[in-house]
Amino acid sequence: MGNGSAKVYVQSTEGIHFDDVAGEDEAKESLTEIVDYLHNPKKYTDVGASMPKGILLVGPPGTGKTMLAKAVAGEASVPFFSISGSEFVEMFVGMGASKVRDLFKQAKEKAPCIVFIDEIDAIGQKRNSGRLGGNDEREQTLNQLLTEMDGFESNNGVIILAATNRPESLDPALTRPGRFDRRVPVELPDLQGREAILKVHAKKIKLADDVDFRTIARMAAGASGAELANIINEAALRAVRGGRTVVGQSDLEESIEVVIAGYQKKNAVLSNKEKMVVAYHEIGHALVAA
Ligand code: ADP
Image (cartoon, rainbow, N blue to C red; front, top):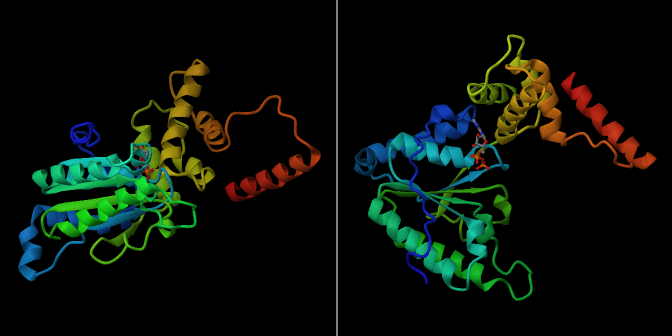
């Protein structure tokens, strides 16, 4: 066990670029510097500048953090290694640390490259955060990660991107200078962002002439990129169910409700109190949409 036990590090061949990620202009802007550095490290080292070793992508699930990390690799045409923090938690004692070692060994051989750690909070939670006995496996994995990050020079071309939606739960040792010392917020899309994301995903489906993405974007306030992608797909499925060959405005409007609120419950029993709470809640949506 140990070495070679798992093929967790995928080298991305999908070729995702910044253009595929709609909206998120601020995030893209701060990641462009990384791409530029990977293209031309000399420009930076000549001045004596060093790139941050680690960058934390912070934002709610489904906002495109994984996509952005892949896009950085795609834009810079460098290999992309990815692993999820939650994978470590399921492992035998001692395996987590050896996987981290393994990952960095491979990454250094392939440098310049991007290492992406999804759900870093699964291993990077504050140590001794009150739980009795703690979790040795997690701590060992975290310690190994810190050791690896300290072990390499900041200009060797390995850039670590990590994603989390709970930055406050991270161990301060991780966010210390020299480790993950840069934060890139990846927020839920605004109206324009939602419209752009809908359009990107709508390229895959056949649309009726009456489709107005601005209205859909307005109605889907608060939806993440992943939810918007899902809305498009649900609408296409609904069109098929209705025996139509193109997706219409009503399909899209109906699927917003399905994706955000779930399918209509036909026989749930609600108390009067619950009905009232739901009514107030829904009026809120109606007002916002109007
Ligand atoms: P995260 O890593 O933040 O949870 P992902 O990058 O895995 O989110 O996004 C999940 C899916 O949602 C993507 O595969 C994509 O289809 C869609 N998506 C999310 N954000 C965007 C965006 N800004 N532009 C286009 N598609 C998006």
